[in-house]
Image 1 (tube, rainbow, N blue to C red):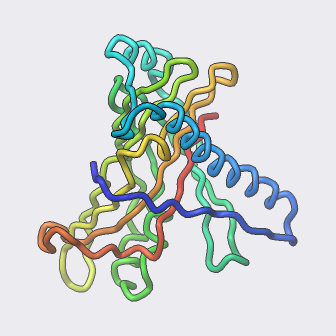
Image 2: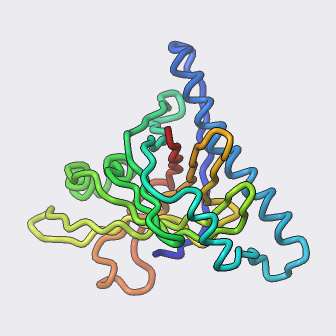
Amino acid sequence: YSTIGCDLANHETYNKQNTKKMKQFRSIALQLMALVFVGGMLASCLNDDDNNNSFSYLSKSEQLQAYGVIAGNHAGRVYWVSANGMSQARLDSADVTLNVVNDSTAYIYNFPTKPLADTIKTEYSDLKAAMLQQPNTTLTIYTRYFRLTPIYFQADPYNITYNVTYGGANHKVEVAFYTQMPNYLFGTYDSSSKQLQIVMNEGAVWVDRENNGTNPTNHLITSRNFLYKSI
């Protein structure tokens, strides 16, 4: 998975013309920010006595115990905030399925490609148009548990790779997420509501990265937060 740095963006605005939609938008947006805030608080508590700012992960047996609670398929939705200027922000979502397959791997099936692509910079219009035509995909997530009651786990998405043709040539396009920051990007499980949630943040779109050295061009205008919630 990628190891790009953290640049979380806050998404909240007002839409006076549609009260019902605005309430839903504010609810999910606040949950996104609340999850990040709670994660930061938790990280602070865990790291008070640790100069290396590293987490105390669960033992192997505890990892397996936590995995056993949430193992299997979970129908849900992925939420994100789409915006063309602050006055036009709106909440979007898509049906997905989360499959927690072992103590270190989970998959989100039918993850939407469109919101991964529609923040590509306008100067890369050919790339953006080609990416918007790509089908939904499977997002693989590396998991590592650091709290048992309630369950909290590090959630690091692997890069998603697309083989895309535009401009008369084939290109390898990679979508990368911020990773290795469980104090900001993580998953939780609420045993009372039986609900799983995962916070993710898209951070880069790279084209033919292996041909562009150690500092490839990031084609995104800005990063984008995603929130998975089981239903």
